[in-house]
Length: 331
Figure: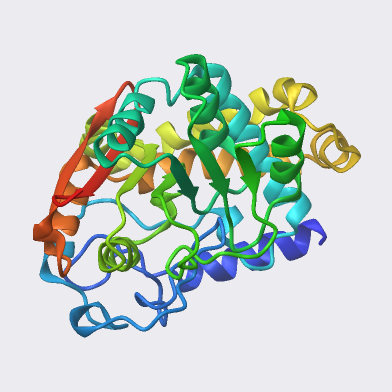
């Protein structure tokens, strides 16, 4: 895809996006209800949703969500895989080097201990990112018994290569596509998601949580946390903040690319010859912070889904990372 096509496609998405739907400051664009969220990691639901969760019907609690549903480039269906995966690979590397998820791995360990489960089913895995960090952290603590199954609706080639390079018999990347809202019954375990929740508008988060509650599965989602300071920022200063952040991410991408594994010629070409990957990282990395959820928003959504009152919910922030866990009380 050429630069003109990239710019034109983005403009059309921004033009059509519904940033502030009625009764909420967040939500899908026209024609994108709970049955078709924008899952950048490949998570559009397949199952039919009952009652208030059907397309076009939003639980009243969603009105409290204050995030903005801006467009991320990796969410766009026409975005070439080499650019999308190159960008997510860089973001995952940055999170790994910063130890971004260090403070939330104990939440997953505690959920495994409480439920007695030793298998984790990771959805929307993409390039592996947080899930690979988590399994390394658990192994460092002597948790050799935990098995991770990474899944995605569009399995990521680089992610599969990273899993294969680990040579860990209890770590696999499933070749078959897996929809986060229709996980096959044979994939039993704690459901996790790393770094993808902010891609889902509130209606889709509600559907995602409802599907896991309906299946009776423990869940643990980890992501970027909403910044209270950012939400209080006057609107007139927002473009300035975004510009500074985007510049830092754009420049930083050029230094990080040589450290991403496995090495790929396409990643170097799309960084140093035509810098489309740095452009994606700059935009998506900045917009992610604007789309991030606060703990209280996720708790309100979880408690409103059918069957949610039979779960113990926990949400908070460790460092800059958000954690959101749910466990059936019978577990």
